[in-house]
Length: 313
Image (cartoon, rainbow, N blue to C red; front, side, top):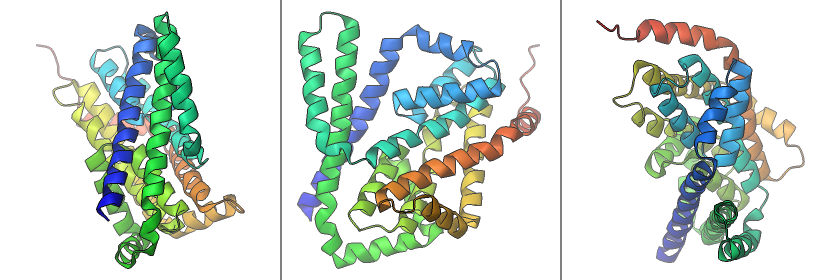
């Protein structure tokens, strides 16, 4: 059991290290262009939504994108209204990683590691070096998932673990577990990734995987709220909008939990359970955005009234 726990921790550390390093590498590669592009292409809600999706897909971290957005809002480079569109887009963009995880790409991680290492070794320019780092970190990310996947294999024969996993059959308990895990490791992608892996190994049911996924959506709000500390009212409203959107989406998800599970099963007919969990993650976030994108003016009005900008005397 000690060996399993240590292997899972090792895989998780590799995954989190790769996500953080990948985000930093891509941000450094883009430099000031990232901020300029975000400002340029956020003239309306739809374009802000697209920017959020693309940026999160590239950085593989919705938290990183939302924190960058909060920083830009705090610097008066973005308005609160522009930021809301990006936040919604980030929620869709983060589902791309769960689809990749469900592809069982982990076994090809040594190929990414090799290509990334070779590019770093022969790089004579910063551009090639950044490309090499990005590929290398993708390899580390996938290898971390592969390590966790192999580590949890024996757990399906452990009666106590199977009993503990049955608790996730309760949507509320499963969501709480997902939220707490995400709060601890500060990565919803890692939490959803573990749910996909446990489902694939037959340890977690589709119901449990979806419940944990719902909880992960709430747990990921903590670091974005931290980014608003000592920030402007506009930045604080951006963080509160993120929490409000995720919280209301989760409450609706729990109320309509079993019809949602049936919808996922219908859409994922013939698909593996790990693919079904990934599909649930994507479907939940897309439906949430489709429902709430029309309410942006309402949220803007409520939050502006609750937190009016300080008047300069």
